[in-house]
Length: 212
Image (tube, rainbow, N blue to C red; front, side, top):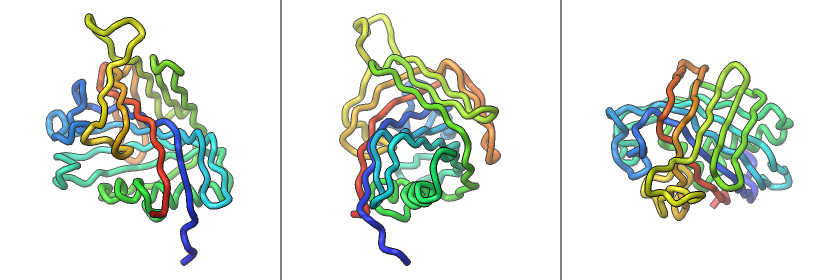
């Protein structure tokens, strides 16, 4: 087996799930109704796996589980779409990292996946507004997810609803979660089809290194 090189990924992550707002999973609690289904999206702004550059690549996962994932009550079922722009070396690097084989935070997260139903390479559009007012992901014919930042009568204009150091962060410790509300969400594939609106969403930046 080849040794895992030093690697780093930094970028934007968000999800849209079936939970009420705010998603209890982010607070390390059981999901709404004890069942969570949704879409997760990662965009690599800067990335390198050994000498393989990964800048600008995107991944999208569909998943569901029952019970408190953080308390060891559940294992997720998941299927993943990877950016078709990736060349062969980049595809191998992304699969090693997100498959949990290259260490770092993704290895611990992958341990919560009980069934991986497959990986497919597709065109992916990913956008996050600079002021975090909106974020979206789209895979033609398969996934649409559009979100507006959560707001309310006591939210100052232009400010975001955020949680510092969330206890159930999907991208690891020490981050800031910005809360949103889905405007549109629809997923197809891997037996994980789902639609919904006005559901919980959060954006969290990530910055990972490995293999240690």
